[in-house]
Length: 421
Image (cartoon, rainbow, N blue to C red):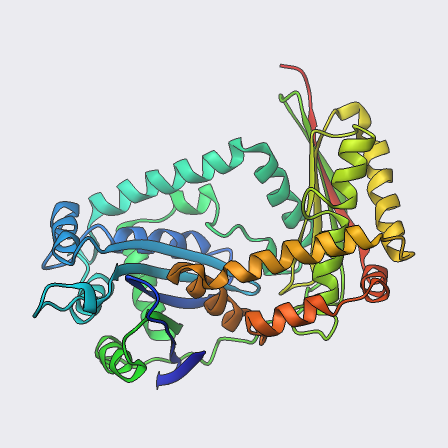
């Protein structure tokens, strides 16, 4: 069970007490409205903060401190959740009860996180220039790697096409051109703005009493004023009109991405039915798209669907021969129509449910998985615990899947047309 504490205005701590694990975890997320002009800064910031503090000014000193904390780890955490982008840190550490007698880990870990967040290495009115430039290069390499993954690139381009009027099309890590414009001073200015204007979401998983964790976390965020009045609640998909774009690239395999919309989101009564529909339709190796378009008809190399429940967006991605583009498009629609008509076998329904249930069962397998589910659920507006979610999935009928399918409408597409090199 998750216990929530409001530490200060705009600062929420959620605790999941669990003594099954040798490790606990803590996440600190500054929640920002997704904006094109600051997405890259938010993505870059935690990497820069992890390069050094006043007391631990370089990676060697930070590594030594983490070693002293029984091999604890701290990593950058950047998420996109509907209208929000989060930026912050994720920490994993041994539970106090497994440390040597007299040693503590949680309390000094929290103090170290405070130093990472609030005591960065500064110079010339900004962050350390060397650290900023080094992490900019790393972020650009990451963005270039995503572009070189053609499936990921095509999926990203589809969301840009669909979301011309919605911030959900902004890449989670920003864009290469934005990264190039960042310097040590404007990033530091953004950091100060982030501290004073952002909602803060804290999540702890471990065996410590929530009241103890609350007292520790108050020591980080009690020292400055915060105005979060600019934050809005999650909104449904804002439709700027659909389009069907294409691009040529020197690759032998084309990438077809089709985007659909539905009014059903994770806050709708039909949410579980939509998740089951997605699994029946295209998510997994028992789905209609995989079994028919790939296996039976051999029209593609790969195919699958994904459902962005915060926004009510469903996407289909396929790797195909360029010459088969139109027939693949048609067959995807044919499989959707089969779902609309309720032409779903008992085996298909059961396999779809089991895939979802298996994923939900794994939520409590590790501290990181627990944090990922509950923290994201809180930000996205999903009110169901995994147990309630599973019960809702198990109760879904073929008729409910067909009703959910009827709400799905083709909106946009993007085709990366492969040409021989």
